[in-house]
Image (tube, rainbow, N blue to C red; front, top):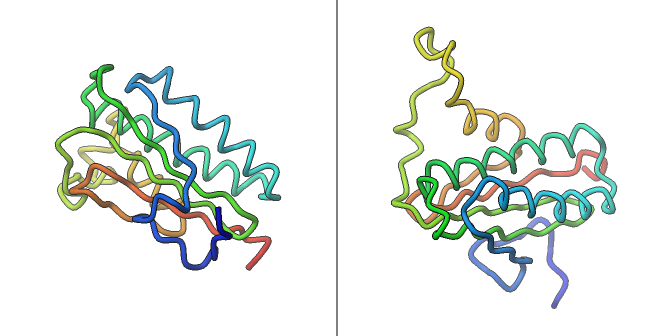
Length: 150
């Protein structure tokens, strides 16, 4: 594997990423988290950045299982990631129909504030430096820049 320029990671190039594919269940969705968080810890990220990445990954995995694959355990969720001291890029892809992010209602409106769900995308955008939807909304790619190396 050739070294990756952390400022020029192309989410379309699988050769640059480690890949994990899991069954689409919430139990299986936790497996990539432990692997990725271990690499983040080993790469020198601070506690706040680690928390942000963990939360964003949990939300993306939950969305892929519940909303993308509609809880169908026969479908797969594919996680591609790169961790290095400069940044973390994680892409989560489901086998669902996809969606348009702009169609998701604003969770901060008064009528939605008391709902127990619907804040995942907002949290991902708040905690990650870059968020991009691809594959007609079936894939989210998220990047967190390590503040210790900026």
